[in-house]
Length: 139
Image: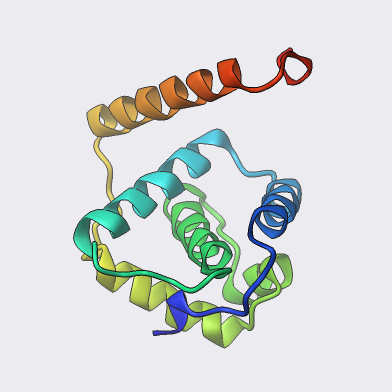
């Protein structure tokens, strides 16, 4: 499966650069980010034995964001636009999207109640993390 095997990268730094780039380029709403993380949670839930090579987290996050963007936006980006944003070939993005959707059993709908519980969980963990980092990063 293409989704799980990418070129090996310096994990933390590359993921941070990628996130900055995508968030700036797409003007991504918080709802899209929460939903993308929910899709990642579903991926882990439905396909617990999947494991990727180093660097695949960027590819998987890209596809989760793409699917969330398509689900929530009236005018979502096409594969070519995502290719420009992510640096991944458009055809590969299309294959990875189909694989991801199959893995989550095409369950892209999240009820309002489930979404709000998920958002609270993410916000709680984010608050816990912010309390642990050095004071100069807290605002």
